[in-house]
Image (cartoon, rainbow, N blue to C red; front, top):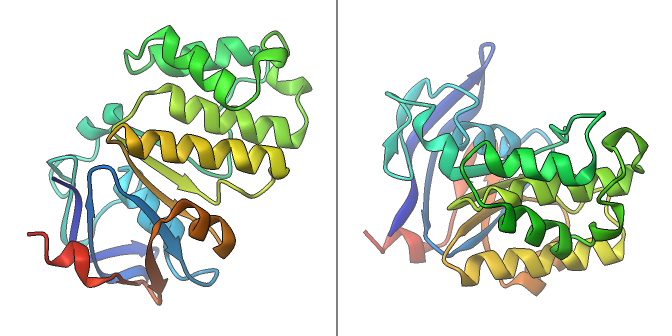
Length: 218
């Protein structure tokens, strides 16, 4: 089943084509690693898939929704975690996770599981404002997974995590894919992708270079 399908997708930041005709196919249950240099278009691609940026030309279908027509309907079925935590400073870890789950109708069990999987149980009553940078990163990722989403989009998720946090994240990525969810993430860390057995898609100059496997699945 195709979760993402892009054909000649162009996305402008101002007048600059941050995506310059990208093609991409991603199937359910895949872990896809977006590699490439800074400024290549990785973050733009993730934000386009999340409906946060407009498609200017080409076609883009995500979770069966044509993004040229509707950039909002599919958002309840995906999770996006970027450089901002999207957490409320005055809410505790538990409250932020509960809010993230309720926002999309996910169960509180999903929030509780996310807390456990990211090692946040002992910090349940601590407010976001009082967390360290690494703890905030864990919370941001846990909030994404608490949504119980079909498509998980992560921008540099390993950055800012200690070794324990990275291992917890990798275990959660594998758990999500095993459950049939799809993960697309950007990272400069090759060793993490190898350990995850992720399929590599190189983003260079706003173009996506993927292997032939997905292209032949039509």
